[in-house]
Image 1: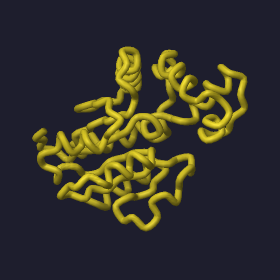
Image 2: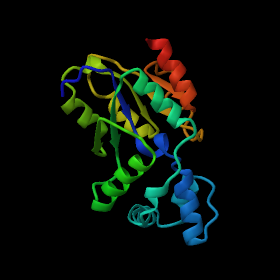
Image 3: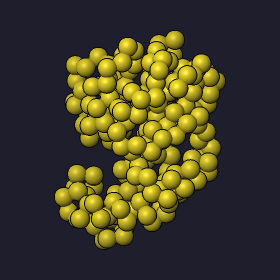
Length: 194
């Protein structure tokens, strides 16, 4: 993949949208639960089946976008970034169509989208000029661990977007991982790297 722009790699769930809050609210309402966070939800129900029902329900067409997303995207477009969305959502017919519908509905335009659980491998396989990756935003700590293991020439920063403070200390001391909770903070960080 040869690209002439700076590449921004973005996740969807937990970065562009309000996951896991919307998912927890849906599960609480649908199954008469009272879970306050994702860890409680995983402990009180058959989580895998609940998650699969959620994916197939069509509710992802109407998820909330995270606060500040529109201004963040305007900034990226004004700076001529190549927007590459890599989501770990499973490759299911309705998941793909629901995702693309949601992106279009919320005017989230992108240059490329991939549905892939192994983000590290897809980055490694598709980047011929690794110096073009300017940053990545991800909310899943285990996926960040996998990307950190990829041997690339460019040690691009990974923004750990944990807006719910669930894993705040996970990457303490790793100078490649930046912990941010708001898109305004991301813009300030990027402006400082120009």
